[in-house]
Image (cartoon, rainbow, N blue to C red; front, side, top):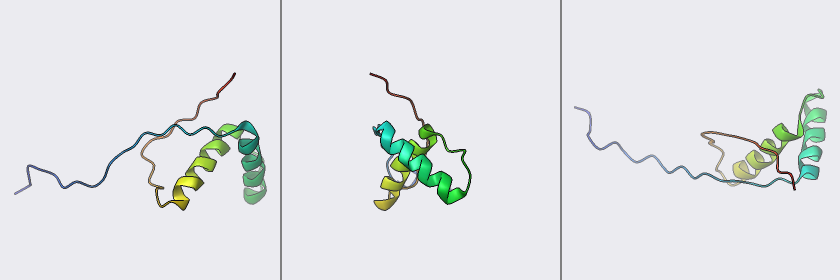
Length: 72
């Protein structure tokens, strides 16, 4: 018989991480070199910067993702 109280698996935390444009571009250049392609956009690379930081902390199980430009 299924439990009426599912087991707690963890928590979701929504983070907003600011990645400077220069750092995103450096990551895009690094990823282009690593993958031998030149398709990485700074937006996609910004996500990779944040993903690598989370992975280094053991928090790499992203549930959702979104990247937006910040202009000032």
